[in-house]
Length: 387
Image (cartoon, rainbow, N blue to C red; front, side, top):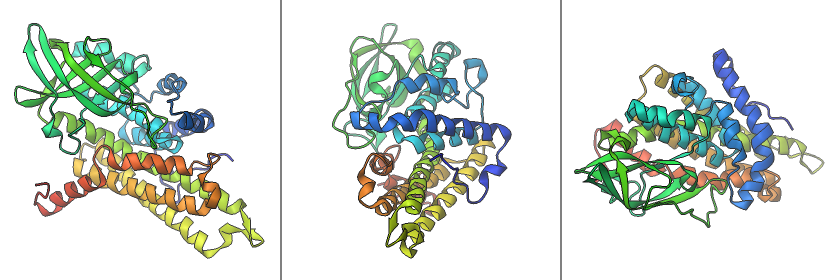
């Protein structure tokens, strides 16, 4: 059955012609290119690499960055809509685009020299190069300031040692944006594939985000040239990147919820029990209404957040609210959808279990649900509860 946009409050009517084109183009891409193959890749534990060039052709990498670097120069509402549709397909596909755009291209554009921009951004935009972002460590996730990875001065550059964990695209990456302690502060460095002492073994055995490559990054006396150091110090650098990525996640989670809701609605209308569709029973209708209700609220949150970001008025705390709320309701939608589908809900004929498992990762990466709760608590009370 062809996908029908879920837009109960006619939000899409308010979009500009460019925003409508982005959403519709990515929605068609998901229907025609992602959904036919994603279950196979999820079961196999592989990323569909043939989608990379097609996403690049759609302008999905660095979509908000200037056209002079081969990017689309679109606004942040367009970026959000693109992430929503990609995650309707699969969280792993959205994660690939989100990492490439928000965690790699954004810091290179924002903190890199013009030489570095020209070297990497056109290739990353075209999908001929893949990037990853190294912040989380085996022992430091929610507390990045405790990182052990470090850089020291050597002739002509820096010597990097340490390790990173849970790195999306790590084993695929041609360039890694790595955050390390240098001279007592956190700094960003570009580590390129093939540099001596740099390896990126893939992490196996995942029950979630199986259609996504997750890796370790290991640095053993890796020599980094001076020009590969980004012009930013302190946690402001990596946190600014995470704000960009969390913004996309907030939209993406709604896409996942839309996917499980639409599957549930279609199934409930066609599944006959007690001589009528189960959509005709009060308990099933209550479940469907709950899902639609929360999706609609999440869409409104995202639209307003996008307008705030495009006008330069958004703050990171507002992103925390959107990420926290939308991922949470998406998980609940997936669980309700599993109930509506009954035993069929565990089959790969339907996207329910795949979305449900994926969202368990989305709930904890880029700031856990609890960490975002504490961020918001500190903002509204003025009292820091982290320590």
